Length: 205
Image (tube, rainbow, N blue to C red; front, side, top):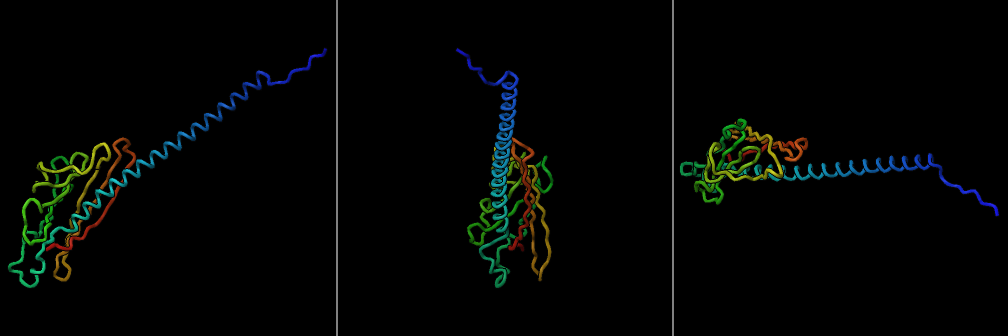
């Protein structure tokens, strides 16, 4: 009885096949890892953008009300008795150790009664050790009594700058505040976002 010759891969062919398989697996793993990295970075950037946008929108919304008073009409028909407590309340400063003009103070008539009710109608924002804070209880730029609006684990505010400009338009004093905000991801300082917005203070007197 004749034995049929057996056909198969030689040792060399088998080694080549295994090597090619390993190279293919390594390439696929690298592509997969890169895709995960890109997606992770995109997610972090998206989160950072949302946090920065929310912070900017809050400051802009508040600043647009600066100088507002509920009896503004009196400035026209009875200027002698009109409230002046909300005049020229926009002030720039900074917390000791922070950059100049990284703090802004202002006031507006929150309950629209035409009367400045003290601390509850004094507002402001400042940079403090990488965090954005909102003014509480009439605190000054260089004092305590501020509430943090950002969380150090989510966002780091690397720069906050307020620029105040004034000009006369038809005998009306127009104020503009430019807000420059730069933030970074605490876990990856290379992921940053910069935003700049100009706010017109329409209630300036």
